[in-house]
Length: 457
Ligand code: PFF
Image 1 (cartoon, rainbow, N blue to C red):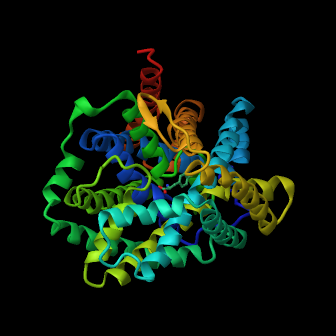
Image 2: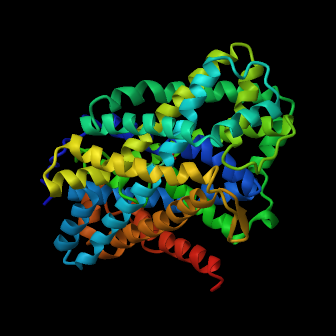
């Protein structure tokens, strides 16, 4: 049973898996989404809930997802079918794989559009467009981009092709090397930005916004968003980490690697927040500016610091790379499934998924201009129409439900013998602690948040 191997190959080492999974986790979610949803949801209390979710729900579910993947060694759908059978459980568990694949398809469709913004900004920054820019100038450059569907389509197309090319070549070649260099560089640039923010005159205010919890500003909707974001940012609940886990050598410790990945992911998000909020306050901007937040604030820093054109170009380039390594993992479950079940090669599989997601991306593109509409969800007004619908449906609903199901499967439906064997933590406190978290704490927390939102409790 445990001697199974994946037909898609294996990571060459523990480090390779950490890099690939960190590449998946660290992306637009950390640098683009975390700051703007923190701004939208009032800061400190939201951040605290997010951190608690990472610790108590995210890390245990990441361990569950990796262990399920490694035990099944196939695409999430087939892994779930095999394990359900092996553990004498109902075949319905493969729904985890199906719903994950659908979530991945929806996520990649908007993820690629936003990654296109980052790509567009590489060229704008390199051309010196932001030199000496004012807050109003940066805002109008951003709105010029998002109100132009043709431009958005062009960048979205380029990004989708980049993703398809890497996925067709297989997750291993290239990815390991790229992440090994780019991840540390991204970290360094974020530190540089935090350094700049320290001198903006509003560093203390930025930190206070991020780290001083004001629970009166915390709605049920904000708690759901914080929890959904913990799943999104750690790439959990849809099978991406399960697929990556299926390529993990048996000798690697799932617990240690999961903790390392979650720590790095959280560090990047917090650094992004520490770079952005001081600038928001120093320039009299609105923390709740929405999805354009980093695209309107960071150009102000790059436009005024020494070497800003160079650093800015590099930053948006790295952001694009971070998005790229995440995008690859988002379509991996579907590609692996097509290869296993439809007997197509990776190139064909990646093309099928890529073209379908590219078409779907048009919905997101139009939602920032012609198709924009407002609606209210959990007491919050959203103004980017279908983009917000897709975001809420995937991050706030499908990923937490997927993660909940994985936690239940690993905690209640797999035998202790199987999970203990995969985790290899012994029978002691660590293993029992994990089991308690996936059996009780994580499912309970996810359910409470949903019930609260539905006004049941
Ligand atoms: N974790 C990625 C980010 O924070 O940008 C996004 C993501 C990747 C979500 C993979 C879901 C996923 F399966």
